[in-house]
Length: 389
Ligand code: CP3
Image 1 (cartoon, rainbow, N blue to C red):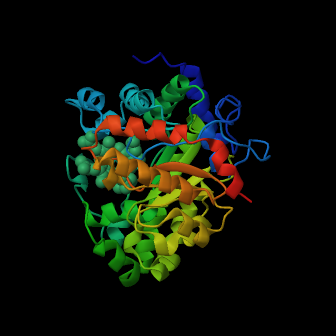
Image 2 (image 1 turned 45 degrees about the vertical axis):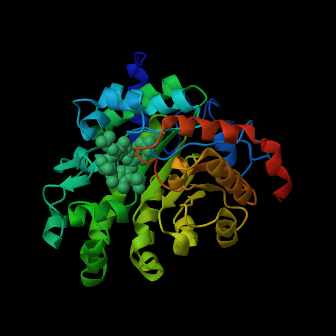
């Protein structure tokens, strides 16, 4: 099923991850294997690797949560293995990452892992409870709790590095996207100890005890930044920071208590030449601040029209999004019209990568996703050109 991995390549990637500030010479982006892929061209705002204006071979699309429960082959492979154990089994993680690429012909793979993996690797007792989400045995609520947080050793990333190396070896010219949770979203799980709707715990802490909040968010930024860096060094060609719950924050709170920590996470992967994407839900009021945190590309959820996102961010900012996941179960005519609207709304941005406005719902019929991909690929990239400056 999966080809044997060259362990020397894995070891080299691990050594680089600890040492250098550039991607390794045999990295798919550096060596040119993924550099001119439609995804990378659009993430650069319609530019080739040399920085000259370029048109992608086709309009790129991938889906958040494209790997996972919507796929019968995923459900079969995961049978009897817990979510986090699957993430830490390099062969299984690589295979799950590749499944949606084979099935849907999407323009990117997203690494199969989870935002709480760095916590698990640091030795924190965390599980993903089916149909609930991440649950911690010991929530992190006081200064003493934060001070007792373990150090995360770089060697702990070995299963991640190995899974990424195995994956990119089989992906060829299709880029792999690495990711991590943004400090606010990760800290929200740590403080609450489980998913919550309003994230009252972390939002109280940043006002009531800002020093403890800053210490916790700094810890989260460090582990998430290093998690992204490990994936990039091992072969990912881009990285996305997920601040899924940032939309629960007011703009002032984001600016004062959160943005600097997301910037710290991005600082671990800045300057490598790999595009960095920043995504959250309900973030219409803070899109500019999310870009300023260090993103090249801003992911837009389904609530903000892409033409409006361009008005808020400027035409030079490449966008990613924002097909409404709710429409995946509508009649095809309704879904097709919506996809065409999203393509048109995104055409004013320097670059546009199609995606959903949040993850694939587990109940989605995978055949619908395949059909959406082929619809997007059938819309000529030449149609992008006239609206670009
Ligand atoms: O295709 C992909 O996007 C795969 C990789 C991926 C997963 N989680 C796999 C996963 C990514 C990028 C994530 C990120 C993640 N994890 C986020 C940010 C993105 C978002 O959805 O907003 C968040 C908030 C988490 C935390 C988390 N992990 C939640 C809320 C859940 C859902 C719990 C449930 O059962 O409903 C998970 C579990 C999870 N992560 C699954 C997958 C495929 C489902 C586990 C299963 O198969 O049972």
